[in-house]
Each structure stands twice: as structure tokens, then as C-alpha cells.
Length: 139
Ligand code: FES
Image 1 (tube, protein in one colour):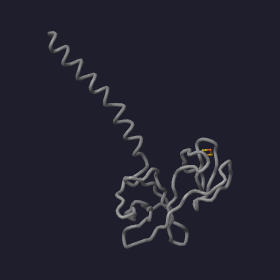
Image 2: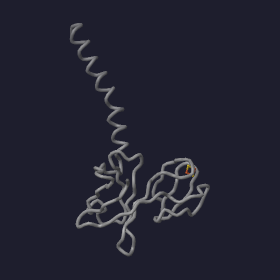
Image 3: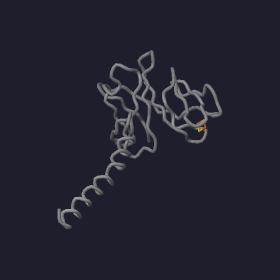
């Protein structure tokens, strides 16, 4: 291997290594959330996003936080903002509700506080079923 081949191979290896963290972080950002368009303040979510379950996490273009779409037992829907109202910690599903990773506030799937330190409920958005789409009014 001459000097030119060595430099070319080394640079290619460095470039490949430099891309790995970016690709991993993008994958991490998208994990569990489907990025959807927001038009005229409405996030359109295909009904099949929920699959056979009663919840789905989605992300909307231009929205600061992910939303959890929740199908209630009566067939209606709500959308909860997945950010803790205490100090902005991330929320994850826990049992029949959501729990904050930071100080463990718990919320039900209507967004109501079950355990503090959070004192306020999660922000929620109205959802209308429209054929095979759910329309979440976010703006
Ligand atoms: S930030 Fe969620 S409980 Fe403190």
C-alpha cells in the first residue's frame, strides 16, 4: 500500500466513523415516533398508526414535543403532549399510564396527574376521527 492508498483508506474510515453517531442519534430521535405533517394547525394521523393497540407516539413537523394518541374505551381519542409539566422531563409508558423519567411523576392516559411532584395535568389536544385519519388540532 503506498502513501496515497493509505491516506485514502484512512480518510474513508474516519468519515464512516464520523457518520455513525449522527445516524445513531437520528434513529434515537425517531424511535417510537412517526413524523407527520402539520397543515393549517392540524396534524393528520393515519388511523392504522395505532394498529391493534390503543396508543401511538407520533411527531409532527414543527412541533416541539412528541404526542401520544390515545384511543379511549368509548372509541373517542385524545392526544397528550409527551413532556412533563414539572420540569420538562421525558415521559414513557408505565403500566396503565405515563411516568416521567426524571422525578417519577405519574399520569393516567387522560393526562391527569396521579403522583407528583408535577402539579398540573399533561397538555392535551382535541382529536377528531375523519374516515381513515385522525385530525389533531395542534395550532
Ligand atoms: S420533570 Fe417530571 S417529575 Fe420532574
